[in-house]
Image (tube, rainbow, N blue to C red; front, top):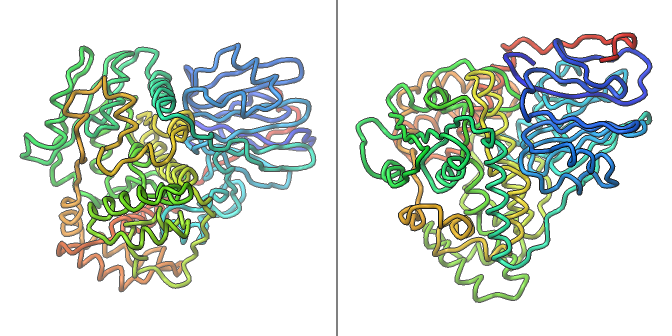
Length: 561
């Protein structure tokens, strides 16, 4: 771990031999060993202690002394911290037992691996991979190339395990175990969910901006605009709206101009040819392929135009405009007419037949409904490319949770990238567990609509938004720039076709080259699959070129903090 990155981790209790910590780590507890690396100033680390017991909350939270005392004594740690605003993990050590909670969405990841001296856990997979002596996992990459929703218990590195979101890692002298602590809440009255969402999202923004320091936001769609309005309650906000060069009106620009707040400074960010997708760039190594690898020229410049703390609206589409998985719930509850009507409207908007949707709904095939509109498998993937997906329960709540967790996992790599390469704290309030709980508190068919845009979000915050935003039905798209970017960077992209993914036998270079040539001509392109290949290839190169994190042996005499 380097470049100012924060991290934490520890090991099994009761160790009598030597242990290891990352270079530059600060030992916080000696037995069980727990350490931190990097800057944990402010509210990013909350510590509590009692008789033979200790607790730490790492990440963004509002945990105070009373909260920590209750959590320290609680028989069920997960229940004690559930509902706290923010995105955080928790480690508690009581009587020779260590419990590490991964948050319910996966915004703060927890990984672990086995070593000769016992189990070691950390928030950074690449650091553990260096300790285990392993590199990227081809099977994980295969799953990622297929649909990016990779198995929850695996990391992008071989022999480095991930604690799935909403699960706990329990360490004792005898070994390690993983078990769930979170489950989806039972849905209730719709207006109760609306009120709960307002409280949860307000808390998610407050915990990141409540100190009153200036922050920046993406001032564009309804999701980011809502965050801007909430953040302005606590201090100055700079709202940044991106637009193509020469375009001075329309789309997000017009919507941004309708928002006037006392502490809001609007700033536009003009996209030029140097911001086109697929620009050549040397990216730092992250825990997995970053979502923005293809947009790094634009992403890094936009971060530079903002402030050191930046809020994004990532995750809003997953929560408030999901795939039509609610059709299966409608069928399960005997609401056949509503299912037929929604399937017809959803299909008409996307110019497809509603018949497959209804067939999947009556078969309760939620996974198929979740993949609606995703398109066929990319032709450049080899037949042997692994795709081991975790099963999704046969309801919309599980599908929505799975979708948000996948988004949070991809975004976490961007958070690493922003911190290490741009020195910016990137926050995604829609990825908070309390926000997910609030959304799931509404029945699936009540939180979506074929005739209203993001009804749950509008009902919760519409009174704070201008009328034009409340009536919005679309969001901006930059797909044209993707075709332009491929044309401009075609030689650069073709060079990637015979890279490490091809060497691993995961792609067919000739078919990928053909797809790139078609994309350069403006043909319809499976962008999600193409971007996954590009991001994975860039990431493999970054990991291979970056120095491996180093670990230091910590003898028993030096374990006292």
